[in-house]
View 1 (spheres, rainbow, N blue to C red):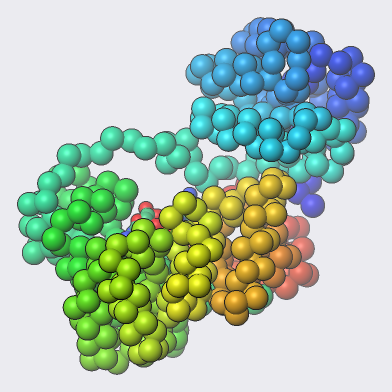
View 2: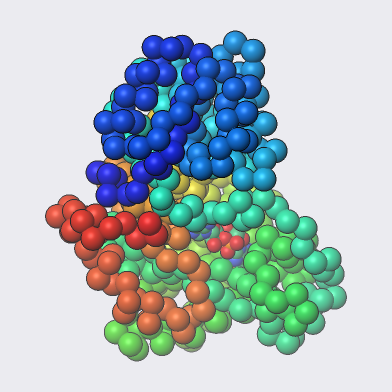
Length: 423
Ligand code: C2E
Ligand code: MG
Ligand code: MG
């Protein structure tokens, strides 16, 4: 299916078994790959990668005498520019997962992890990812030290209205229609430029100002939502609530009141919460959530499946939606473990009658897998990145057709025939 992508034309096959090397080389040849080099061990592989900068991809066996595949990955990570890697091994899935995560955290690009004996279609799908530009670049995967910010600055920024809401679209998989948006805070810092929450949200959460920030975000989202509804787009929006805000019972009153005067129905407002939000002052928090639900607000369990958001929460919170964390979503199409965990999250959501949103949908493969698994809604860079509120309508005008074509199966085939987005 992904054969419309450009395959690497210079490939290095690394395996200590002559038979395996010949077999993989033969598969590559059958795919039309022109230049297939072979290395008999890890040392040989590294020497060839250094000597032949034209090598575009490596198919690497994990178990080799002397330098094994894990060591080869470490050595590759030291190079200025390492070619992307397809890992191959006959060992158990869980071990392959560990090595895959290790490779990624070293900053390497992994095109796939294949169980031996290698099957033609799996190798083709992995090599087909070669020409798809990865959306999460190495820089965004790693924490980079940001500017030192203080509580006084947060106070000043709230007065000066430097916090702004960006909105990320959420679409229905069945027909590609726009369901809603998630409001995500950004700080338009006068010195440091546009800052994402990773740089400041913990600071604000630890200060007295979290509820104030939540209410400013709510006001901005309500203003935008009125504009979208007026333009004929009756969408909902989601707002993130943090631990500190939820333990403040006055916050629920303020939210209920502001939404009431806005003219937007509470059914169009979804409040996203994480497990850490539930942990503090359980009594107050659960009371706040129950009141919000009684008033008709949607309640979403955010980052489901991560350490902060577990199954127990589903029985405690009167939730209406489950948001599967992106850790289970992006990459599940070529990782059996992730796919099983993803399937179980979708299964739980369906049995509990919850709306389900998959976060972190970055590629067409992610989209197709979720559609096949019957997931309801998706959010992620493949659909659209967070954007200023006024950019949403023009974005939807430009992307509505692409989303709708991806809904039905024949539409997907047409999109594929026209080339993959981002390739
Ligand atoms: P979240 O609520 O889970 O929001 C999703 C995050 O994933 C956003 O990061 C979004 O930009 C990012 N994202 C979306 N699609 C993709 C994708 O396809 N690939 C990747 N790699 N990432 C994707 P952002 O905006 O940096 O926000 C990070 C977190 O900060 C949010 O996670 C949320 O927990 C918190 N946050 C954001 N805005 C607010 C807010 O107004 N209030 C509170 N309390 N927390 C907020
Ligand atoms: Mg969220
Ligand atoms: Mg999330």
